[in-house]
Length: 270
View: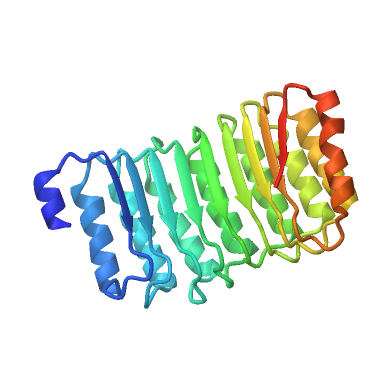
């Protein structure tokens, strides 16, 4: 890292993959992030993959967030991955999100992956989205993966409510809740109602694969609410695969009917 800085101190884009790296343990991870955050002050785009590292915990993820958000004043695009941890909880995510208060509002694109981090629940997710919404109202693109995390209807309702209320410049949104088995028809309908208020949303990708309590009735209301009431939406992608209560044939019939009502909308079921 020191060699990279020596030759490219004005670097504007940086992508590093540490997934499963045996050398990245605790203090080493923290010192690496601190070096990047304090030295590469011209960075506008940063992508770091911290998935499956040893000794990752709530304290360390909070320190990583604090270091990045406090020091990187020019960052516009941020991509962080923390997949497959049993040691990160909602409290850690809340502390990580706290650092967003100190980031200047140049951030336009954020991508965060917590897939398989089983102890993250609704409180942590709500705190994260709240910090993004209140401190970065001009953000244009959000991609969040909470596959297999512990979220319920009230959790996704609160998350979508914050997004719908505060992020009026949002153009692209991806929310992934695969294998979140506590989500039901009520949760996805409230989510659709909240997101349909976004005036500039053009690309929406929602994934609820293997959410067992979602039915065809819920999906129909969900898709129609978004398709018919989100004025500038041009691309809608949704995934309800492996949901036990959903009849695939009926799901396939939904798209042609939507095309009749919104011929300008590109709809894709994965």
